[in-house]
Amino acid sequence: MNPPDTAEDLAEALRRQALHDRTILLEGNGTKRQMAGPVEDADEYISICGLNRILDYEPHDLTISVQAGVPWRDLTALLAENRQMIPLDPPFADGATVGGVVAANCSGPRRRLYGTARDMVIGMQFATIEGKLVHSGGMVVKNVAGLDMAKLLIGSFGTLAAIAVVNFKVVPMPEVERTFLKPFGSAREAMAARDRLLAGGLQPSAVDALNPAAAEAVADKVWLLAVRASGNLAAVRRYQDDPVLRDALVLEDSSQGSLWRQLEEFTPGFLAEHANGAVVRVSCTLKELENVVTSFEGPALARAGSGVCYGYFDQAEAAAEWLDAAMRREWRGVIEFASNDDKPGLNLWPSVGGDFEIMQRVKRLFDPGNLLNRGRLYRLI
Figure 1 (cartoon, helix red, strand yellow):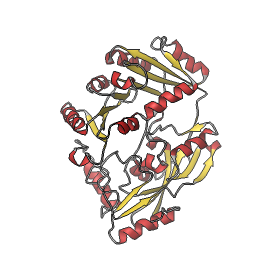
Figure 2 (cartoon, helix red, strand yellow):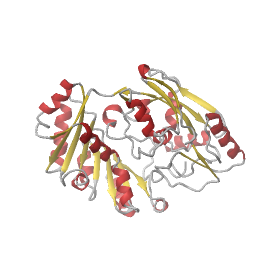
Figure 3 (cartoon, helix red, strand yellow):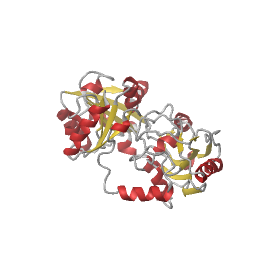
Figure 4 (cartoon, rainbow, N blue to C red):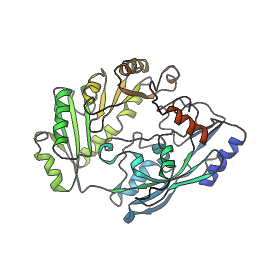
């Protein structure tokens, strides 16, 4: 099937397949096939890459409407021409589409200050399995009507409906940005420095912590804290005067851009080098983060200002063993990335949470025949 190039064609493609109870594999460029549940064979493959147009961009209104197949890099490049941005920092950004980023709910280092896709998406148009087009939200930043419907699709991995159009609020690029790199002898020292920094009233856009095995890829084999400061010149100078960062290495311009791209793409880089590797994601409190990050023998990268930690394993079985032990400690974790060959033998989501029954009901409401992207979310969805 030729890729649909309009929302109407996308809706009709879904309707035709559903009419004959044919299963559907729905995706963009497929950059995140190692993410979430296994990509199962389907009767029909539908790509959203043909929906690749910018529909409405009003720089003065700080809004943009784009079709789901627009490449993420094209979107960010267009916004940069007006010194604007959507600071999601997703992995696999060079090949990802807008729809894929939103459907996988991807975010990166600047999540601490700017939030996730749920904070930036202000409207959406999506096609249902019945062939209907649904509009949710709008093009006004403060518009809240209908947003809940769109939020259901964020992070749904295409299991509910097909995202056709996404409306974003955009933010101005900061006047000045600087990055501070500071090594530490232990995780405890790094986390204590983070606590002092955040308690001092500064609001960095990103605070990443790397254990020695991860830091070796970007600097020296030490515990490393990377702090991204942004704002006007006076605000950024406050970071340089802060006792926590006073003797840190300061990066500017292309050097800091290169560092943050490495951190944003740490997961794709690791998976490219480890065919049977796996990545565990743990969500925890800032207080718990020290125990979580020190529990990994291999590389570990933490969004130390938001309590999200990624652990990297050469073999998927080792990730599963670690996650079993983590569940006994009541940590909330998932195997976020693994190869399709390894996934069938893994418990990717050992604790699905108390809202799982509601999620199943939502799935039945949107896709009662379970035709869309089978197995991609929680196996049963």
